Length: 292
Image (cartoon, rainbow, N blue to C red; front, side, top):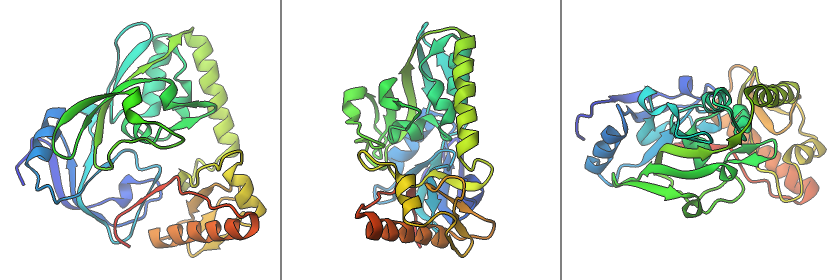
């Protein structure tokens, strides 16, 4: 393993970096200095070593046994949001949805307000076609720049990503380091009003002030996951320190002392009950990584 310019930490605890505040350590945590540093590092890394990108850790269960290989976390150099023209922005893979939407607002670029409600980074929501309040990343993405596991740097256009609901065709070990997003001209006041509406709706309906992972299950076609979970009698259901939220039943929460094993097991119990009551096989939206 070469010595990179960024920070490389062995056996780095991941629980402080994820919203659930649970889980084991990364065998290696790499915070590259910039895109070139990441490219060089991955090109020299033994191809058998697995690589995973970590954003804000909002939509993630890190299992208690930790994550083998290298976990890549993008730092400040890859967390920018810059204007290209009156409707287009270039954003680093580590930039938060709040930073992107706020920068767009200040520049009078509308259409990106929904990113305010996605608790993650550009890299994460480009990978999973993140969306909320009637819009998805596929509606605003022009292209993205990725570093493949081989160290090859590549620009992919929207069609290259083969987007579907909460899914892209990106290789699992590819790291999104930048994306070009396009909106439309609007007034900062109108954009702020829409951002305020979204923020109020989230506050009213979601358990934002808890240790949670965001939406747990994908909505099945024509149905809402939370309604299926509620109908299966799972509101408030607990397993150890894990609980199905009373406020929004598609959210799991860590009440204080939960393990990742308990959170994941509670999710599987919910899936079993929904399958038994509604005949629907809920798909996980939260990514689960590492060893149990």
